[in-house]
Length: 74
Image (cartoon, rainbow, N blue to C red):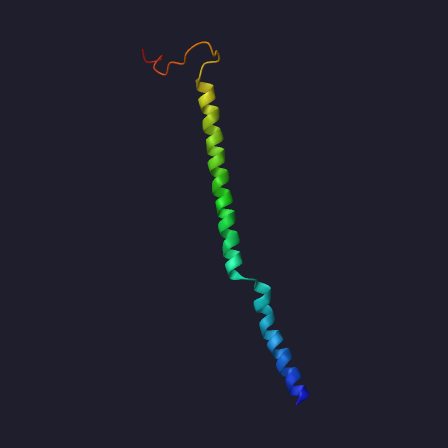
């Protein structure tokens, strides 16, 4: 009887071990979602900084002059 109990316990542990090794699928999906959000926020931040760089290059260097966006058209 004792041998049967040991065999049953060892079999159940052997079958359950791969499930424990895989981890929690809900946590894995949450980690993927967090990584996606980080990537998107980095892309948005990079685009924002690039836009700011372009805007500062277009404006004149002197702060005393007023910036005229239609100056080249006239």
